[in-house]
Length: 593
Image (tube, rainbow, N blue to C red; front, side, top):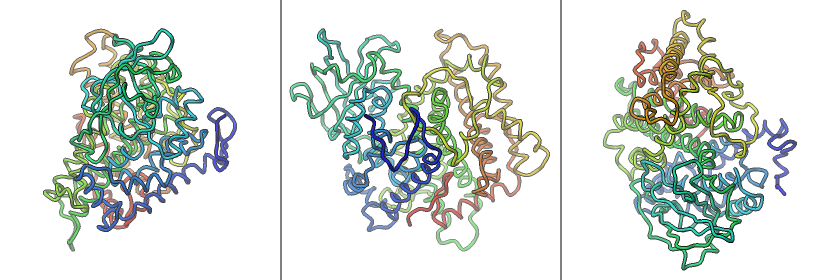
């Protein structure tokens, strides 16, 4: 029987709820985020055991920040990763990202080591597990336990995704599991293991199977725990390895169907990667604030002009990254069968954007940015080391290209400039959306709702091209991205059919680069257009003009300089948020200080 907390008042159909409950979800998520922010305290306070000084020290010692992990466990963080129907608090992926932001603003490694990896492991169970498996994993996480995921090997993999396990079907049922992985997050302290095991030596879509294992039931002769490994980034997280030898796994460990592992990975990675992008953006906020601190501390005169462009540019990029991640996560609830394409594009764009942003902020921070024990400025050094581990390096890029490239020809022929726009609720904060249901997530087809949104928004803005000022500039930029989409359509129509050897190489990768930035621009335009006036700054077009101008420059699209006053307006907002202790994301929430 599925358990639902009475306080949630969730009702009716398989994923349906009352409108009253839906309207409360966002408020309740923000309240939980505010509570975490208050519990974690002022990140710059030297005596705060959960502040940046303590977290940096744990990173230097290469040990998890035990006191902060205990705080999060006592607060019931594991309930955030359990669907509400099983007694937890997971309703929507975008709301989960909001709850977790206070943790990730302080330390990316803390966020991965203390919790979110359990969601990544549990995802296949929520998507395809039996009722008994779901209840088991839910009870484990609600009780403060951890789950870990033993990934299959990916091409171009870093150590985290290298090597894999194999499972042979036994005549009487069950599997014989063998193999070794040296780098697994929380392998030594997980209460459940979700294994992507190779069950077919071929490279087809039925090559892997997912198994749910209980470490407490594993015979010592069949399982060997390998020594801890210290990675270049996330040094405080616990990475170690596992080796299975002739380990007999019962048939009831199977999650979903035999050979269904690749499809499960594609479905759940949409959630995992969207969350990673949104939460890595929260970590980058901390570095931006440290750069503003460096540029303004001790000054009685206006900010030096040489810092205007990097600070406003990164602020615009962070708002753009937050827009992309938020829209992708909301699409998982609103358009679950069609969200996979945009989720891949977001995962393709955001990590590279954040890496570029960190390099820009390094020019503002100078040598101070590499004072790894300095809580006021050292977040740059730590995030530059942690981000490649979180973003899965080149393997993440390759996996996104594998989703995007095969669809470009079909999209160009049948979807672009022919599809209807998505519902406005996709972009509107506070809009009522359905519960996230992993079972509904699609992995192929479904068209391209973000390209449709771009075309629709540009058409509505076209009348403002002669209005002058930032609004006219935004209309012009929107039109140029539509022109880029038309050019892409002509090129992609000429691509060979999927499955031919010609559909590879640098030229095709460039097409996926261009496509991803075009739909990234669509997310920015959609979020700007979806504003209800509650936030005057986001309602104004200045931030969107800067964000789209930077996207256009990355694409090589010639664009004029932003209108007079545009950069100054964005800079004033950034400094205002810094001085009043507000976050640099779409929500501008109060921060502990």
